[in-house]
Every structure is written in C-alpha cells, then in structure tokens.
Length: 142
Image (cartoon, rainbow, N blue to C red):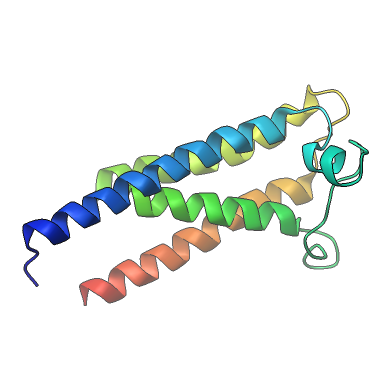
C-alpha cells in the first residue's frame, strides 16, 4: 500500500508524539524509582511509606503487578517509537538495562529496598511488550 504525503506526515507526527511520551515516561519512571519512599503513597495516603497496589501481585506474591504494568506500558511505547531494526535492538537492550539498574539502585536509596519480585515484574513487563510487539509486527508483514 502506497502512502501519500499527508499519510506520511500524520504517521511521522504520531511517531514524534510517541517518542515524546516514551521519553517523558522514562523521566517520570526514574524520578519515582529513585525517590526515597512512595510519591503516590505521599499523595494518596499522606504516608510515603505506603505503596498503592493496583492489583494483587502475581503467582502468590512472587511477581510485582505494579512493576509489570509500568514496564509493559513504557516498553510498548519504546518499541513503537523505535521500531526500525537497529533502533529496536538498542531500545530492547536499554529497557532490560533500566529494569536491572533501577531495581539494583534500591540497595543504595534510603527507605527503599531491592526486591526480586520487583525485578521479575520489570523484566516480565518488558518481555510481554516485546512479545506482543513482535507478534503484531510479524503478522503485519505476512
């Protein structure tokens, strides 16, 4: 299917907006992750020690559901924004790196603690988004 100039223009604008949301969500992720306490807990419960829970954790409390949701959304934004082959490889490496780095940083942040269930949630969120993105991309190319 051949695209006219207007369609290319719209597609390019959507890509720019997606990249913007991806970068802004990364900045917010880093701020929320490195803050000593829970920013949402401070706002919602007036207690920075309480972390709001969207749903129960998965697999008998062994995988953090909040982390799966956040990393799935941010990862999907990244995969859509950087879907060209070389960029996709780089963004995948970046997302796995940030998954590990941010959770490991909790060893050094007061009031925060490293949890394997959070790290698992981060990684699973990236894997879920990558799987969905690749399935859609391959189906589209058939």
